[in-house]
Length: 385
Image 1 (cartoon, helix red, strand yellow):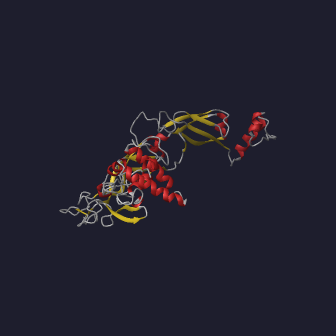
Image 2 (tube, one colour):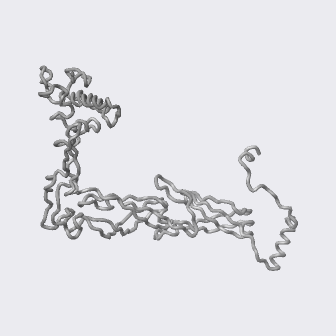
C-alpha cells in the first residue's frame, strides 16, 4: 500500500501539506463521525499512512523501498503502531496538540481580573439634569494588605506541586484500537495552578483579597436619566490573587419631582389659573428647575415670566424653549412645556352669582346650546376632512 496514494499527496509534498491531507481524511473517516463499518478500516489506513509520512525516518525508509514498520510490512502495525500517538487524531479535529510533550496549556495563573460591580444611586431631578458630584460608599473586594495578594502567610512562599511538577496538568495514557490515547487534565492536587500554598494567609484564607468598605467620589454628568450607568474603571472587585480590579457601574435612579415631569429632554408642568385670569389675561411667575440648585450665582435664572394671553383656554400649551434638560451626548437643552388649566369657581356668593348672570346676559349665553363634537377623529377622518 502506498501511503502517498492513501493520503492523496505527491512524493514531493511537504510536512504541512501531508498534515492538512490527513486532517481532512481523518474528519471524513473517523468512526465517531462516519458510522459506516468500512470507515473504521479506512481510518486505520489513513492513520498508518500519516504515521509513515509524518516521521522523517519512516518516510525515508519507505522511499528507499524498505519496510517502515520493520516486521509485518506496511499497515501491519496500523494505527496501533508503536510510534503512533492519538495527538495527531486530536490535531485533525481541533487543530492543536491533544496533550503530548509540550502540548499542554500549562498552569493557570492565580492572578485573575476581578468582576464588575453595580451600585444604585438615587439623585434628584435637578442633579440628574445639571450634573453633580456625590460621595459613594461601596463594599467590594480589595487586595489583602497582609499578604499583598499572594495568598501566602508573611514569611512563606508557594511551593511547586509535587503531583504535576508545576505544570498544572497531569497526563493520562490509555490504550485503544486507535493506539495510545493521551489526555491532559487539570491537576487535582493544586487545582491547575502548578503550585501549592502550604501556609495560607490567615487574613484572606489564601485568596489574596478581602472585603472592605470604602468611599468613592463619582461625577454624575448633566442629562442622565433613570437607568443611565456611569462607569468607573478599575473600581470594582479586585481579582483573585490580587488581580486587577473590574469596573464599577453606578446606575442612576431619578426621584420624582413635585412640579416637573421629565419626558426625554423636555420638562412638563401644569399651571392653574382662575377663569377670570384666563379670560382677561395675566402674567405669572413660573419657577424653573434651576431653583432647586444650591448656587450662589446671582446671574442664575430661577424663574420665568409666563404670559397668559386673554382668552386662553384650558389645556393650552406654552413652550419655553431651552429650559428643559441638557443633552447627555451633545449640545443644547430641551424645552419646558407648560399646560394651562383654567379653574372654574365652585362656590359663589350672591353678588358673584349676579355678576356672572349679567355677564352671561351681555354675551347672550343665558341658555347656551353647547357644541357637541367627536372626542377624537380617526386618521382617515382627518385626512378627508
